[in-house]
Amino acid sequence: MSVTEAGTLPMTERLAALCQRLSDEFEQPESVEWQTTETEIPAAAYTDPAIFDREVERLFRRMPLCLGHEDQLREPGSVLARELMGIPLLVTRDREGEIRVMLNVCRHRGAKIVGDDGKVCSKSRLTCPYHAWTYGLDGGLRAVPGAAGFPSLDKEDRGLRILPSEVRDGLIWAIVDPAQQDVDVAQFLDGIAEDLSAMRLGAQRFYRQQVRHAKANWKIIMNAFQEVYHLKRLHAKTIGPFFVDTRSAGEAVGPHVRFVVARDTTAAARTRPGKEWDLRQDVTLSHVVFPNNIIIWHPDYTSILSIFPVAADESLFIHTMCTPHEPQDERQSRHWERSFDMIDGGVFYEEDLFISERVQAGLKSGANDSFLIGRFEHQLRWFQDHIDAIIAD
Ligand code: FES
Ligand SMILES: [Fe+2]
Image (cartoon, rainbow, N blue to C red):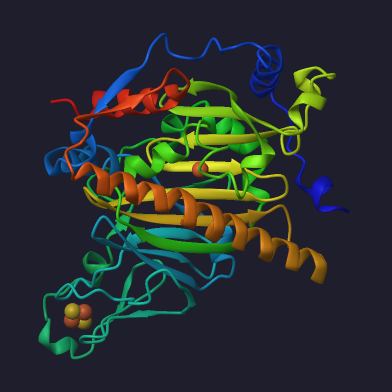
C-alpha cells in the first residue's frame, strides 16, 4: 500500500460543499466568505497582561484542552509530565490501558513528582522525590514511609488530584481545573468532532513531537495558521509554491472552523465535482479547534498544533506529527523524517514562529495601536470575536 492510499481521508457532506465552493469561486475575484471591509484588532489584545489573565482564566482553565494524541502513550505504564500555564500535569496510561490526567503535585507537602517534562517514560509507580510518598498510575496513594507520623491519614483522601478528562477520536482532552467537573467535552466539540471522527484521527499513529517556546502571544501564533494570505510570501522558499494565492473555503462550526486551502493541484481537480476531490491531494484541509489547536491534514501525514499561553508575550508551541500507519519500510521512514524536519523546523519554526516573534517585538515599539485585518483574513476576525465575547466582563 502506498503512503497516499493509506492516508486518503473520507469525504463528508460539509467538506464536499466547501470543495465545491472553492472550485466555483476559483476564478472569481473574491469569496462570499470575505468580510465586506477591513477591520482592526487592538494591539492590547496581544500585550495587555489583564487581557492575558482573563484569557487564561476563562479559556484555558475552563475549556477542554487538547493534551495530545493517545498513541503517544501507547504502552500501558506510560507517563507524560507537562507543565501548562504554570500547572504541572501528568498524563498516565495504567496497566488496564486507561488514560488519566492528574496534577503532578504530591499530596504531602506539594512537590512536583515527575520531573521529566515532555518525555514519555515507563513507570509502574509514581514516587515523590521528597519523602517518597508513592502513588499508582491511577493516582491512588499506595505507600507512605514512616506511616506512624500520620496516624489520621486516610489514603483514600490523599490520592493525586484527578482532572476531568476523556479521549475522543485519539485526542486527550482535559480541563486543568479540578473544580470544573461538569464540562461536557462532546458538547464543546459539537460539529467539529464529526470531522475528527470521519477522518479517523483515532487510528493515526504518533510519529514525532517538538515543543518550543516562542516569544509571542499565543493568538499571534494562532493567527499565523488561520489565514492563507502569507502562504506564498512568508513561505515563498518552502511550501509557498504548493499553494494558490489567497484561495480557501471555510466555515465556522461554533467557535471552531473547518477550511480547505487551494493547492497547485486544485485547478486540475476542478474537472470533477467537489465531492469527488481527494482531501489530502487536491486541497489542504485544516481544522481550528478553539481556542488553541490547529490540525493540518498534509498530503500523507497530519500535524496537530497546540499553542499554550505562558505570558502575554510568550507561548508554548507543541507540534505533534501523526501518520496514517507505522512506516512500512526504510524508504517511508526516511520520507517521514524528512517531512517532519521540513515542516517542523523549516516551516513552523523558521518561518511561522520566527515571524510571530517579530510581530510581538514590533508591538513593543508602539508603531501600531491596532492590527489591520484584510477582507480575506476573516478567520482572524471570527477567532478574535469569539475570544472577546468570552472574556468580556
Ligand atoms: S512532598 Fe512528596 S513526599 Fe513529601
Ligand atoms: Fe504559515
